[in-house]
Amino acid sequence: MSFRRLVIGLSFLAVFTMAVRVAVDTDTWWHLSAGSWLLEKGEILRTDPFSLTKQGEPWIYPGWLAQAVLYGVFDTFGFAGLNLLTAIMVVIAFAFIWPLLDAPPLMRAFVLILAATVSAVFWSARPQIFSFTLSAIFLWSLTQAEAGHPRRLWILPLLMVFWSNLHGGFAIGFLLIGAYLLGEIVEFLLDIRFRPPIKMEVERDRKEKIRNFVIIGLVCAVAICINPHGPQMLLYPFKTVSVGVLQAHIEEWQSPNFHRLEVQPFLWMLMLSVVSLTLSRGRKRAVDLFIFIGFASLSLMAARNISTFALVAAPILARESYSVVKPLLEKQTPRPDFPEPIVRRVNIIIFVVLVFAALIKIAIPLTDQVNRDAVAGHVPVEAVAYLDEHPEFGSLFNSYNWGGYVVWALYPDYLSFVDGRTDLFGDEILEGYLNAWRAGPGWEGYLDRWGIGVVLLEPGAPLAIVLGHAGWELRYESEMAVVLTR
Image (cartoon, rainbow, N blue to C red):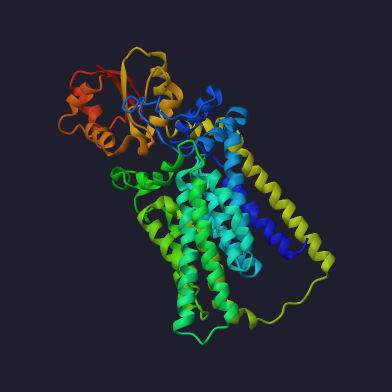
């Protein structure tokens, strides 16, 4: 095994080992419920059956295909299947990023693992993991087209058909196409205005690339319409980001909290990229600046964009940082060469030993009990089980973070009051929920309006405390949750 192959193998082994972990989060559950509905009833959900507050109202969501895949995997292979599926999608994404890293093997490995560490906080068994992979494939295809392979652009409309049926993150594809289009336009204008006279074939090449990016963007827009909801899916990303409660109260839609250790690698990558772009003596490509500034800005506004930033910034960091250190590397004295057969054998031994070590780590999150323990640390499994045994309490008011699990474990006996489908509930329902959760003005009338007979809340929730003093009966209590009834 050559040194180059050893570095590649160990890099992807490290990424895969990082990615195999408990992938279920609080939103996974309502996705599994929707996937179960689709596969068992044979119909795509167009109206909401799961919530008290929006039951029967139109529900436009682009992730039906991802939900079917997630539930199919979970139903067949359990938690281990979801964990492996998530890890496989992560590895595929970085497999498309690796050839874009223009640097020596060790530097490429460093950038790849850094990008994986940055994005890891958002790897989960949700439709967004498919957007993560498709973003990498889009970036690869656009880079290939810019390098002189325009035919590879035509895989993008086909991918966009799938993307618009997998997750609302298809807007990322248009941002990447837009960045490459603007980059070519700026380079063309700079060629004309400030650079020496360009050859006719160079000018023709620039114009052809601009035309190709425009055409492919339009074709991708048409491709989005190939979904159960038709052309209205084009407006879905705008509808989602227009929900004000997202930015105000939901963590992944807020600016990153750099006091949290898991977010700090993003800061390191951001700073390394800025320093590399500053110190690099080579001419900066306009498309790189558009991509870096655009996705860095999006990540600083909403932490959920950090994972995409890690993908698209990795090639820029690799290329520019290598440009900075290349003169130093060229001055290094050559090291003595060891016999090739010995080197290959040593590399194989190293790789095999690390594979066994990785398998030991990977086996842990594939066990059912580890996953169940992790789930019990995020949602009130025992409190929900208590409600499942007592379906007679009436309409439920539940904590937002537990709504997805309520949908999974209690439907149809109990409907969720709210859950992670913020695009469905909108500001009116979510603001009403927040006011009631805080026991704000008019909370009594709000619970009466929805006929609430039972609440599932955190013990420290203001509403839970107020209800305890208002004569509601405590039916269940733990460190995580309380159940109170009228």
